[in-house]
Length: 427
Image (tube, rainbow, N blue to C red; front, side, top):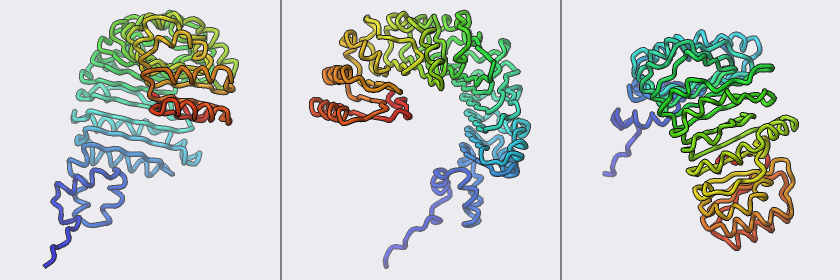
């Protein structure tokens, strides 16, 4: 007799649960009850409720309320990881205003989910074109003593009202608010190894000083600041003082939309990665930032002798050319504005370890004299594996030059992106 063909429902519960764990949370709960009672009963297996990831774009307030009620009733106390992404751009205006009170509905759910102490990772991302009511990080967060990762991104005010020192296991913290309120008495846990903060300031607000709490984080290795200073804000050197306390520990510093670079950028000498990303909608803002940042990178880089990754944007950094020095020997990833790269060719001979090299052109046309010189350097760079180019124009002369480069160095991967795509994945 031929062997009987194995069906999905012939599997034991343990294997079925493993299969179902690869489905999206909402997909599981929408579809499986329609299949059979056995699969429906497995939906609430501890294994499937341990990691809950939901991307929800409600078209009316009621589905959102139902989702939050389900989380509080069925998942509270069982989850280790909760990843909740809410997009409310599909709501009508009146319904969106109703959902703007989301914070009041969400806080009891988060408190219930964390009450049992088993939650280790919490991500809440609420994206809306209208301004949401303020989300207060208070006692509900301080009670999550087992939390290791906390990520809150809120399209409204995000305000810390309770010290978070009790979160002794917290390793990474990411906060995005419009704006973010981080008062000086809101202590952060000293266990933090990674901190990312973003304050989407409104018209007339800012600039904000670096939070003083950063100076009290002895294990901080990664610091990311996003839109922390307004492009037209006055330079405030004192606002960067906490950075000096991290001189021997900070390894990665990422500045996104920070128009005024820290004057003490060379203080954290243990840096292995420095990434600066600025995108200016107005040319005058870029020119103002360039003028304010003139000479800061040139003075700081020779002090960063462990730097393996350097990413500099096409505008606003003030960088004219790389300074010479022993610091170049440690570089493995280098992304520069094309004009600064061309001016730096005499010193790039010392950057023999660069494996990935990126050129930003932005709105600038390709310089027909500098482009072949940069490609010749790439051809002769002994360790180079990847060349990334962000171009506005892509003419026949550029194609011919790149084809010649690949013929002379076939092991080199050459990747070209249009102007509106970042080179972020280069590093």
